[in-house]
Length: 537
Image 1 (cartoon, rainbow, N blue to C red):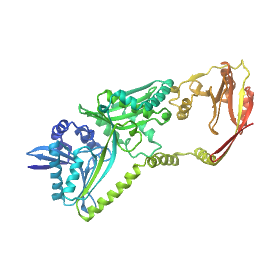
Image 2 (cartoon, one colour):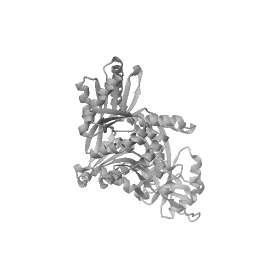
Image 3 (cartoon, rainbow, N blue to C red):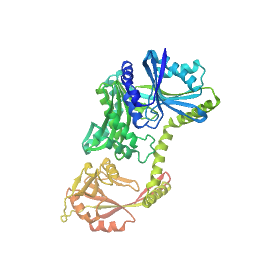
Image 4 (cartoon, rainbow, N blue to C red):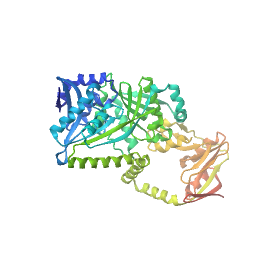
């Protein structure tokens, strides 16, 4: 004989902690979102204003199943039921041992029919390979209840399906590409991958905010209550469940992170982010690779990327599953209308989210536009308008100046700056891009005096580049007050000095001539839509 109870407070639920956790232990659960610690922490922080109802099915006074639900009453006094954690829990299930699952589901749905008469279920995050979804569908068919199912792909790595050598061999091209990025970054400074504690979570949220400040973010990951939720969650870890945060650091500065929910043999990657200034070095791929290999070394059987169609999730996967959203209602006209509207909405949403190019345009391009409209200054407006006009028609006149003669006076040594020296500077994004291209920076104290490249001369506005001859250096963004000292320092290495000057900068030309430069060529560049022509005079 089955009976049920409805729990509406965590204090009333607490006596069932051991029973709840015992069921999951015996079932070898690896879904972190139905662990008692996750559910109660979510309830105490993010779900505090939701009408949470934990429906408990009992047999002879002993709890055999738990339904973690949110209950509301909507239009037409229709009772709505959904799993708790909507928007935060990727997967959800009924907590029950296998032998009780079918009986518990059928029993509770009959209770709902008798108690509420008219209701609508919208259960998200049902893993298709598990039994819960199948039992709900079986009930709907048996009792001729109108229902709909929506599927989203879920990708993961099964480390048991292949050896590490086979995995490395399968992705050798990707690993080779990542190794190239890593090597280039390590040449510029110290790179470290390490796990961090709760006391450093603020750096993770700060980095995530920087990552998404020019994008449309609906994850609410950096909201105050969400931050509190993950901080609390990290403090309730146990043998079956724990939160891990790992950081990728360059010279002590965070440039990437992952936050994982680890449940028995599954490592679920909850979120990841990286410093946008370092995009050229692929920090997202670097930390993802490190995190995967760490999970394998710690003995996890599965590395879960979660549900969704993002391309990076299919870069590494070995297997796929599906998560279902199951919608079912009673047969009344009102609830059938509401269910039909929900079905239409979810179908449109599914079509849109599966189109990665559309999602990327909305998230990135629209996000950048909104950020620009909100923060842009007059100078930035002029720069953008100029850039738009140059897409159609542009004329650039660039003069090449070279200083070849030796100078003996005015020598003043400048210190070569490393990338770690510019990490706190306002122009860091541009400087990092120049470091990536092989530029060198020289300064006096904490001030940059000039930028130098020994292989290529580059003029960013026109896009003009040419290879330098041997024993020649290109300088740019130099301090004109120290130009003569700069020339002397470079020439002491036995090098000639080259620079490029747009036609309209007459003052710079005079200073160059005074420092020993002379004009050797003029480059005229004409661009009309996709047609481009260079004229050397």
